Structures are given as C-alpha cells and as structure tokens.
Length: 151
Image 1 (tube, rainbow, N blue to C red):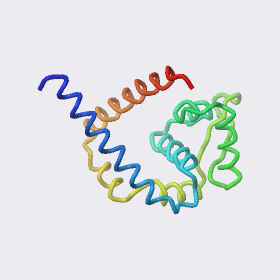
Image 2 (cartoon, helix red, strand yellow; image 1 turned 90 degrees about the vertical axis):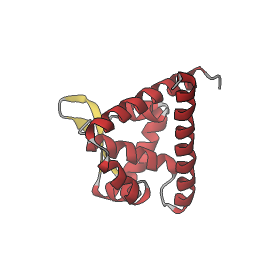
Image 3 (cartoon, rainbow, N blue to C red; image 1 turned 90 degrees about the horizontal axis):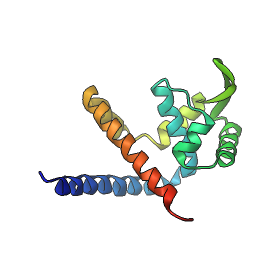
C-alpha cells in the first residue's frame, strides 16, 4: 500500500475514534466532574496501573497546562478527596500524585466504559506495546505542532 494511502487510512481511523470519543464525552456531560478533572484522574490512574509515579510536572506536560494551572487542579482534586500529593520516598524534593479510593471510584464511573475496558484487556500484549508506542509518538508529534501555533 502506498504511504500516502496508508497515512490517509490511519488519519481517517484516528478521526473516527476522536469523533466517537467526543460523542461519548457529550453523553457523560451529566458527570459531577468537569472534563479537566476527569482527564487528570484518568492519567493518574493510568500511571498507577503501570506503576509509574505521576508527578505534577508530568501531569502538566501531558495535559499541556502550566505548572500553576496543574497546581490549582490538584488542589481542587485534593479538596474533593480524590487524590493525594505526597513526597516521593526516593527523592523528598519531588511530589507524586495518587488517587484515593474515592478518586478511583469517580474515575471508573466517569471515564471508563466497561465494553472499552474489556476490549482493551483482550488486546494481545505485543500488539498493545506497538499501539501504545505509536500513539505515544503521535502525541509527541501533535504536541510539538501545538507548541508552534501562535496564541
């Protein structure tokens, strides 16, 4: 398959996914948590699932927010009892962010659709690695483009 056609097919699939996810997000509009809080909780939960510590800086970079904006976001999540910020035991100067049981419950009820979760658990590990690497690299490319766009 020519590269141009392959790229077009990948782009069409990604757009289809994006549009479907937006539609799902609109139906979740009755969620008690705003989208930003749901995104942050989902990222923190994903980091916990992969046993990677989530830091405020990593959260800011992933969300594309400033450090002060993420600090405010984390304060709101802490005040709601959904996350804890703690000193990293290996480097007390660094903070790590963890979900509380209430945060995990809130995340599971607002961001995880059971059929999607079941589908993802069925993906063979070797395919999951390739897909994850592809999406991570694509996110990096998109983020670098976003940084070049004047505000």
